Amino acid sequence: MLDARLWKPLPPPDGSDATASSDAKEARVQCRLCSHYCIIPGGGTGRCGVRVNRPDTPGPGVAGPDVTGNAAPVGRLFTLVGDNVAAVNLDPVEKKPLFHFMPGTLTWSFGTMGCNLACSFCQNWSLSRPPAEEGVVRGQRTTPATLVAEAKANGAASVSFTYSEPTIFFELMADTADAARAAGLATIMVSNGFQSPECLAELEHRIDAANIDLKAFTEHFYATQCGARLKPVLHTLRTIARMGWWLEVTTLLIPGLNDDPDELRDMARFIRDELGPDVPWHLSRFHPAYRLTDRPPTPPATLERAWEIGREEGLHFVYLGNMPGHPAESTHCPACGALFARRDGFHTHLPASSRCVRCGAAMPGVGWDTPEN
Ligand code: SF4
Image 1 (cartoon, rainbow, N blue to C red):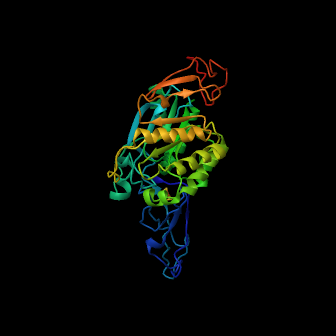
Image 2: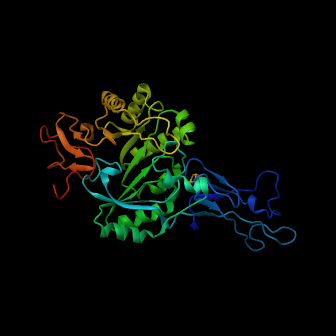
Image 3: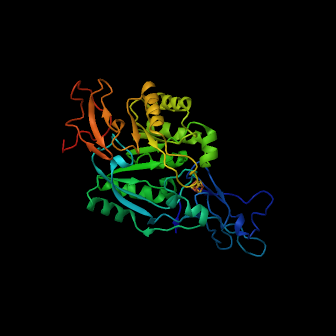
């Protein structure tokens, strides 16, 4: 358990006696890491299940002694996932998915348990849900220096904060990002985009690329399926585009929940108009998981129609995910349509240069011109 960052103490609730109180529950704090802004009583836990308020009782005079000389407890927020990881792997960067960022390289990927959302369809629920639902946090002890040393030893070109939700392991992400950059590694965040603006500001100069979920385009979906809100996610996407990280967007298409063509068209227009037509949009196939087992995997025709909508709306790069071998995994030149980079699953057949062989147009992204090319 380590001290958490991005939180503030709150005064006791209305009606209680701030100076005389010795009730630890009244030593409240507000976590400011994500857009839930949880208010956590002394002894309590945030919605993610991995940030806990364990009040301190300072000496007399520090927090306002009562008439007997006792001091009121003061809230103090800790993280349960600041020094442990629950999943670590060496992945192709295409698996994040990032198709236009250092293509063909490997990324040292890790995540802790816990998540700030509660998506009914979570595809990683064995990692994300136990802290909030069972009070269980498992993981192997580690440090930022260890993670970076492992990344280098395994030939990774980057470190990825991924698998569950990196927002809730912000402290480990921030310190590992600093160490990774100092060691010449790039940094990647794969996230639901529900960070607070304060959290994003802290990350601005630590992250190079992100894949952010845009799970749907209605507040109703975010409220009923994820226990969250759409508006903060849109703010995150706009902010990342403005900050200049390389950005790609992912939508898991779920039959009957977020596959309405009009909604998909609205999403495509948002990406085009507010993030830019070069931002890749990954449309991913749903498989029944966690609490959403009452519907089938996404029909390929639904994914292909969504792909068409993205292209009709002017997005230059729309990809289908969880569809191995589908032609819509590959990158084509937006100017002339020539095949630029063919993919088989997570393997990219790298082009000879960052320019289209037919028309010479430059391909958007980072790292197309690698030394191997
Ligand atoms: S990270 Fe989000 S869900 Fe977790 S305690 Fe902080 S505000 Fe709440």
